[in-house]
Length: 407
Image 1: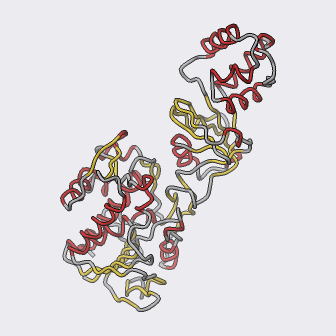
Image 2: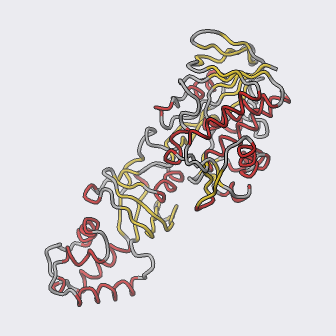
Image 3: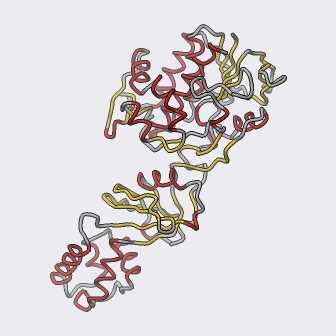
């Protein structure tokens, strides 16, 4: 069978390889001047390509689509991806949190390996080839139309990505193709992205806080509470904790959410109050702006003082018991108001995409159009950070390429 794969990113390259390895005639159409443009920027240029954990643990890190992904992840788990890439000459290493990287620390080596795999399997790669339309006749694939030609085929795998990092070419083409083919598309929102706050936190910009607890509530319900690291930015908050939170709340109205930070999670209120008493006694003649430097970086300490209603110019020996309790409260529950998530330009992945109920989870084939498949970020699938999203691209691409056999 002749197969066209639209998109030369992680899922498209894997889909093309898998289909060609099954003996199909495969053409890979990529609109950019090179393959894997988004792969180059993943993992800060090092490419965290998967997470070396068993399938059941992997699925626990999927935010949306866990049930849909079971077949693809169990059929092509992280261990299988790692073995495949290493067999084709890409040495890998596993780091903290089971994150897997190429030994070279160069994302380009991942793309080169995938390209080599495709070429050796017989895939025809067409760069600078933008697919404008999927050509259908009576809900059956006929081919694809590019800016230069129409390529007739028996099957088409759409692997165009979502909307995150549009500079890499992820501009929603596949979502348009899906709609034109009659598919439902779940509205897309940014995921794994920073959160803008109503409060002005610019004075603390660049400060990273480790071992902090970030909590998020919606009314009386706690949606998220976790210990980790976060970063203060010119717009609000970022860092690992915040990215994880964004994945859980990106489809909720920001005005219904409230955030709080516990800067001293190892101490309960009584222990923290005793710590403050000791600090105030030891530095009783110093200004509070200097005293809080023993607790937090100074600019962040000033924000906490403001929240507690204590002047930074006040001497420690003049702080009342009520003010000390207020400071203790601000350190344990520092309130923040989320305004909105940052945009797709900064989002690691897209949340939303082709509705999973219209896709066969074993083959990634459309249930509506004969010969049409979708994989990767174009589908309504997303997960937490740590290599999970990239593996979803590889696993669904592998399923799509293998799924052509039964078409």
